[in-house]
Every structure is written in structure tokens, then in C-alpha cells.
Image 1 (tube, rainbow, N blue to C red):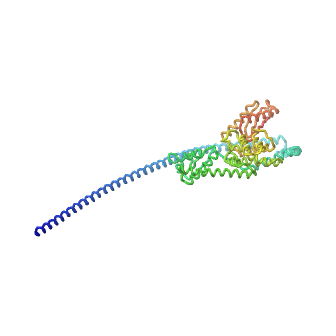
Image 2 (cartoon, helix red, strand yellow):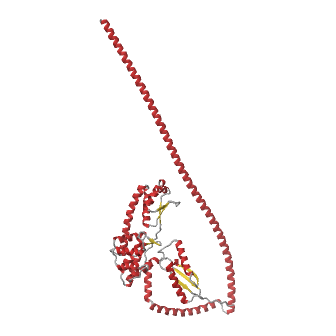
Image 3 (cartoon, rainbow, N blue to C red):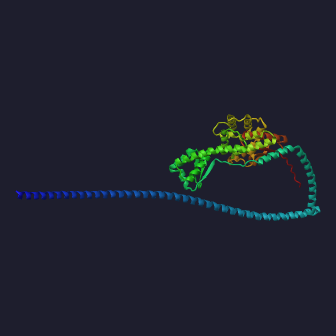
Amino acid sequence: MLLFVVPAVLAGFLFGFFVRKYMAEAKIDSAEREAVRILNDASKEAEQKRRESVLQAKEEIHNMRNELEAETRERRNELQTLERRLMEKEESLDKRSKEIQKRQEAVAKKEKDLEQLRTQAQEIVKKHTEEMERIAGMTREEARKEVLAEAEREGRREAASIRRDIERQAREEAQKKAREIVALAIQRCAADQVSDSTVSVVELPSDDMKGRIIGREGRNIRAFENLSGVDVIIDDTPEAVVISSFDPIRREKARLSMERLVADGRIHPARIEETYQKVEKEIDELIREQGQQAAYDAGVHGLHPRLVELLGKLKFRSSYGQNMLKHSMEVSYLAAMMAAELQVNAKLARRAGLVHDIGKAVDHEVQGTHVEIGRDLLRRFGEKDEVIDAMISHHGDYEPRSVEAVLVAAADALSAARPGARKETLEAYIQRLSELEDIADSFDGVERAFAIQAGREIRIMVKPDEIDDLEAYALARDVVERVEEQVEYPGQVKVTVIRQTRAVEYAK
């Protein structure tokens, strides 16, 4: 029995051993196959990613190449444009050089001809002098001495007569001359002139900044214009952009904002809005400070804060190129000096002069003339009636009720009419001169009319056989009335009528 059991156990043990060995080998084969599969999958995935990376790199290289080609084309176009302009300038310079050479040759020829004529004229004068000396029986020096002696005697008689007339007129018009001297001194003491325009130029570090200002598809420049309310002009002007607006306060805010954005370099809609808001607060504060400083410099106290703010706004307003704040301060000074000279209320004249153009600070926002707007503002903010009366009469719209009102109007005319105070565009200037001359030529008996002194005087030459002396005075008055009705002009226009009779005969 034992003999059968031991072999059976041994056989079972061997059978189990081989079964386990077979199962272990099967698991090892399965694991090896799984490992091979994983390795194959990983290799395929790595190859896929490598291909994707290669494709992405090729695409980026292609895009960079396109951008570089576009930039190269743009630079090439700019170089071609610059080269074309340079060639045009060279051609223009060549033409001018040839013209100058031709003119020089013509001038040289004329000088040569002139020298010949001068020599001939000297010979003729010499012959005539010798002939005259022979006929007169005296030399040239003797004749000169005789003429000079007679001229000296005549000059002494005339000088004595003129001296007596001057002494008499000086006694009669001493007071009038004194007033004229004072007015001349006041005019010479006028404040400096500050000229304004409707555009501001912002300098750029380079022309590349223009593209950043415009932004992608123009979003930056649209955001800037919509926010500031101005026009930004970007043209071929090198390293500069132009900001245009008829509202000077908007233009100044836009100019400062653009300068800060250019200096910062970060230009995008959010940054534009942030910068503009900061500048807007600074400009508002500057307006208040300028109004306070103007009132302090003019010696005017107790103005309402709103009037002070409006005064500050005048710093950014102009009339015919003259800064309104400087003009108002100058009128205040002149009116006060004349009032002190005439021993009237200088404080009233100073105050009315400072606020006489206060309506111009808001005349683009409120309907009406600046005189009517200023009157309403002064009444609203508690100014006295005498100040308002002096203000509203400075353009002759209302009759002056006080000496101070007349002085404010005179100071306003002085400030506007002094040389260099105001300027006009060339078109308006030429048009005004033409209008003045046409008005004068429209009257009967006028031979010629000339607008001179930058349109501040009209000189009219009349026909002496048609216009007598009394009619000349009437003609001057009629021309003045016609000019006041039909022409707009700063300051005043002087009308001079000249009547001259010439009698000419020839001795043969």
C-alpha cells in the first residue's frame, strides 16, 4: 500500500510543479507581450508628438517669414518713397540753380549796361555844368554858396515862424498833449502777447510710434479720438502727429495725454482712458489755479469761485490769435492806470476790465453774444451793477453810464489794436483788405483807394475837380459808416481822404 501511495504523491508533486511552471511561463509571456505593446504605443505617441512639434515649428517659421517679408516690403516702399522725394528735391534744386544762374547773368549784363549809362550821364552832366558856368558868369562853387546863403536866410525865417506857432500850440494844447503822452506810455506798457492756434503738434521719438498710436485695425486712435473729442492727424510729417480741435481745452487735454502715452510707450485703449482721466483732472486744477493767479495779479478780490474758474478757462481761448486771459489782464491794467490818471474809481475799472470778456469762456456752450452771456454770468454770481454796466458797453452795444465804462472800452481797443497783438489767417486778411478797398471805390469821385497798415487805415485819393474840401470830410464820414456796417475787424480803422490839385506847365 505504501508502495502505491509514495509514487502517487511523487507523481502529484511533479504534476503540480509542472503545472505551476507552465502557468508562470504563461504569465511571463503575457507580461512580455504587454511590455512590447506598451513600448510600441509609447513609440508611436512620441513619433506623433515629434511630428506635431515639427509641423508647429514649420508653421511658426512660415509666419515669421511672412511677417519679415511684409516688414521688408514696407521698409522697401518707404525707402523708395524717400528716394523719389530726394530725386524730386534734387531736380527742383537743379532748376533753381539754373534759374539763379540765368538771373545772375542777366543782372551782370544790366550792371554793365548801367555802368555805361552812368559814364555817359557823367559826361553829359559835366558838359552841362561847364555850359551853365559859362552862361552864368560864375563858378559852380560860387553858385552853391549863393544858393546855400539864400536857403539859410529863408530857413531861419521859417524856423522862427514855426517856433512861434509851436509855442502857441503848446500852450493851447498842453493838457491834450499830456493825455496823449500818458496813453502812449500805457500802450507801451502792454503785456506780452501769447498766440494760439487750432492745432497742436506732438513730437514722436520715431516714426514707428505712429503704428502704435494707430493700433491694430485702428483701435487705439479710435479710442483716443472718441474719448478726447479731437481729430488726430497722422500723415507724412516725420516724427510728429497733429491734434486738431476748435475747443482749446479739449485740444490741450489731448496733447498732454498723447505726450504721456508716447513717453510711457504702453498704448492701448485701457491705458489711453486711464491717462486721459488723469490729465483731465490736472487741467481742471490748472484752470482754477490760472483763474486765481490772474485775479491775484490784477489785484481783484472777492470774485465768485465760478467766475474765477471761468477766468482760468480764458487761458485756453483766443481771438484773432490773441490769448483771452492775457488780453483780459492787460485791459484790467490799462483801465486802472487811466482811471488813476483821471482820478476816478480805479478799482471798479480794474474789476470790470478783468471780467469784460468772461462770456467768451462759455460762448461755445451757451446761445448769445459774449457780452450778453457775460452780463448774465455776472448777475448770477453777485457782481455789482456798476461792474456789469462797465462790462456790457465795451463793444458799443450799450451806452456807457460811467467814466469807468468808457475807460474799459478804450483799454479793450488799445489791447486789441496795438501792433503784434492779434493775427489773422492770410485768407481773412486779404479778404478784409479787399472789402475795405471795394467799399471806398464804390463812392463817386474816388480815384484810387488803398488799405494800408494791415487794414487799420484806408487812404482814398479823390478827383479834385469832382470833390471839394467840404465833400472830402463828408466822404470820410460816409466811408466810416459803411465800414462799421459791413466789415468785421479788430481795433479801429482810420479813413484818410486826400484831395490834391497839381498844376503843371513846361517852359520851352
